[in-house]
Every structure is written in C-alpha cells, then in structure tokens.
Length: 239
Image (cartoon, rainbow, N blue to C red; front, side, top):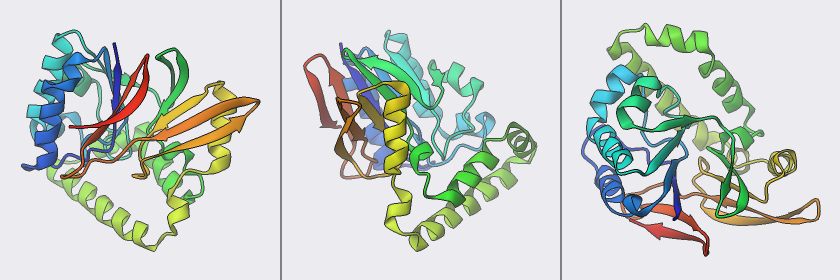
C-alpha cells in the first residue's frame, strides 16, 4: 500500500479548477492509498472552523467519505490554514499532526513538515508565525465577528504578496543549515515538505549517510501534483 503526499493547494472559496482537481483526487487515487498526508495550505485561508466548515463543505464531506473507506487521512497545518481545529478534524474524519513529524514511509525514516520552519532567513515571517500561533492571539481573533476575520485574513494575504515581491528569492527558500540540522537531529534520511513552491529533489551527505529532501509542488490549474511513496520507490503523479 502507498502513502500519498500533497500540499499548497490553496483552494479558493469560489468555484475553481483546483477544487475540481482535489475532488478527483479524493474520489480516485486517494482511495487506493493506505494513508494520505496533507502537509498544509490545503485552503487559501481558514479563519476558524465555524466559517471554514461552510466555505469548504464539499471538501470536508469528501474527506469524510474517504476516511470512511478506511484510508487514513493525516493533516498538518500550513501558514494559511493553521486555525483549522478540532471541529474541522472531526467533520473531515482526519488526524491533525504536529510539525515536524517523524514517520516511516516505505521502510525509510522520514521527516514531514509544511516547510516554513526551515525558512530561517526570513526573520520577519518567522516573527509573524510566532505571533499568529500564540494561543491568546488566536483566541482573541476567534472572538471577532466573521466579517472582521475575513477582512483581517484578506489584508494579511495581500500584505504577504506585496512583501514577497520585495524580498530576495533566497530568503523565501529553506536555509541549508536548518535543513542539515533537521536531518541530524531526527536521524532521518529523507525530508518531505512544501511551502516554498519550488518542487525539486535535493541530495545531501550528512553523518556518513546519503539523504534526500523532496519538495512538494504547489497546485496550479494546469498542474496538480502529488507524491506517491511505496515500497518500489517514490514518484510524482498528476491528477
């Protein structure tokens, strides 16, 4: 049996080829897997389980149907959907994961992450990450009316796009030392993550071991990709 991994779909609230592609994925290849790992940013934004369960009712129901077939669905927060909580998990029939998470994939010790933790050169983003993940900040945000939360999310998204346009490309990628430290700390030979929107494979030699970092692809209307990990190896596949 295989494990399928995907991230950074950024599904919008309105009709979209991305939402149609995700529906095809859940109804097709996902049903042949043992486990599906979603490593963050499935949604363009998630302002709370109350609104999110309405905005993405079709996806939540489809995830629940997949889980009911016996496929294990495991979900890691990204930087756009970190407010997805227990109500979402229960409704979708999935398990919320810590970031990072060490697992065994096809017999190989593997570290899974959304990936933003390793972008340590982008200090402004990491400050925002620490602030936005603070439980008190999240509690206060959740007390705002839904309309106000949507405006805050929209402003944050727009500001993020402006900020990215002024940052050097290298800052928004993972830091090489951070990656090497993760390999050494967790004793894995493979790291799989998303976030950077730079799908590729990177090879390392750490502590006498051959290691590989696999970066998942972000989804686009003309290219919707997931990673298949199985005993025979791994491969990238499109929906």
